Every structure is written in structure tokens, then in C-alpha cells.
Image (cartoon, rainbow, N blue to C red; front, top):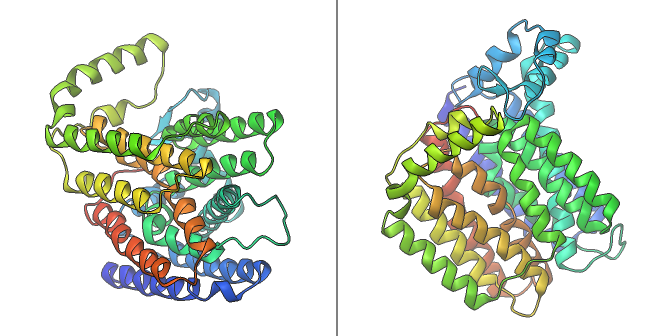
Length: 381
């Protein structure tokens, strides 16, 4: 299949998801889960049968098809970030074990996409229910499940299910861990969530930032709208002044020294990819992500404010570290939480015309981000 035709199918699928999401207020929660499950199955099949010229695909196929000595990998240990041909050991081992059972890379991609999607959806819906103050297994709950999926497809689906598959899987594990804790807060769930996040970081190193996200929700860190606006404005000024480009070389040297002192293998390839120019996508993301949160900001709801903190951390990450090319994928772990914010907002008063207008406006603004990244190509993620 031609790659442009493949992307065209994605756009058609996205439009269909958006259409179905506008009708979900007529459905029971059980019906919503059935519909969204069918949507996920189709998308998993779509991701599995992608052309080899989709970015990163051929590199993953080559790793899958190689006969790799798993015992040799295990014997080298599992230090954070230890890799085999730019891919963390754990993911390589998962791929090799799968091949020994079913020697089909297409089926491997399908399963990875399906698992990632279910984890992301389950975790995000749990986050929405937390904002709405709905209890776990609440039969009266009416979370906008299909809207959550449509927003994910709009913002991240192509990039993290069809290209950056490791990052997509760890994104799913991370937000599932957060949602798992929020469903029923307890020390036991904190420990289990930490274990899940540590496992995720063994698959894709940057997932370790989910510990920061967990800390924000555990300690219920909040931010007022005025402070949000001030800090967002500061980030815009930093980008305009190209501030990070002036100190990044020294910072990278310090980070390499710290890594060497601690004996950490991780992040070396990321720190070697430096570009001091402020990319258009960085400007776009900082402006759009900030505006979207401001439009739906709820000054009376502390749970909204905690999620706004996560979005702001993503914005600050780009503003102060944008010369490191890989930072954009780390920021996405924080930007993912814009989906429960928007979905919760829509779910409360979906029938109002203004909310429908905002919904489509948000989709229109967020849509270009992942396509900009995809069309620029990517390195293994």
C-alpha cells in the first residue's frame, strides 16, 4: 500500500471516530465500551498492516526477524536504558519471545497496538472519572469514552500506535498506572503504580517521568489560573529569546558527567541529538496546548487544577529543553493528560452548542501536531 493512501485511511478513520463520539451521549456506558472496543480492534489491524516505509517500521521488523540470543541479553543485566541496536533489552526480549510462538511481525504489531490502546483508554477514562468524581465501577457513571478515544486518535494515535510503538506501549502503561491509583487511592496502589512505571521505563527509558506525574496526583499539586497564565507566558518568552539554545551545551556536558558518575547507560543517544533552533512545532505545541487548557480551565475544581499542572510541566519541558530533539516525546507523556481534561469538560454539558463548538475547535487545533512530527520522519522511539 502507498504510504499516502495509508495516511488517508487514518484520516477517514479519525473522521468516523469523531462522528461516532458526537452520538455517544445517547448510549449507555456498556454500549460505549462495545463500540470503542470495535474501533480499537480495527485500529490495531490498521497499525499491524502498515507499509514498511512508514517511519521506524522497517527497523522494528529487522529486530523482530533477527535470531537474537535472549540468554546473552539477560546475562548483561537490565540497567536503565541498556539497549540492543537502539532498542531497550526488555522490548527486544518481548519481540523475540513472541516470535518463538507466532513468527509474524504483523501480528506482533497488532497485539502491541491493541494492548497499548486498551491501556491508554482504561487509564484515561479512569482519569476522567476522577475529575468527575465518579467512583470505580459506578453503574451511573457516564464518562465520554468514545470522545476519549477520538481525542487520542486526533492527538497521538498514528504516532504512538503505528510508529513509536515502544513509546506508545509505555504511554499506555504509565497512564494506566495513574488511573489505577486514582480509582481507589491507597498506599498499596501507589506501590503497584510505581512498579508498573518502572517496568514501563525498562521498555522505553523516558517513561520514568511518569514518577513525576504520579507525585503530582498523589500530593494533589494544584495551580491557579493566574499562575498558569504567568508561567505559560514566561515559557513563550523563553522560546522567543532562544534561551535554552544559549546554555544547552553546558547542561548536556553536566548531564553526561552525572550519568558517568552514576554508571547510567540511558539517555546518551538523546543527549547527542541537539538543535538550538526553535522548531515551528515547538511554538505550535506550546501555544496550542496552553490555549486549550485556558479555554476549559475550571477555577472551582481542584482536580482540574492538578491536570493543568501536568500540562504546564509539558510546556515548560519544551521551553527549557527544546534543543534536545527527544524532549518532544517526553513532553507527550504530560500532554496526554489534556485528553481527560477536555473529555471531562465535554461530558458534563455535551448538548450545549458552545461545548460542541469548543470540541471541534480543540480537535482542529490539536490535529496537526502528530502529522508534523510524522511527516518529518523519526528515529526509533
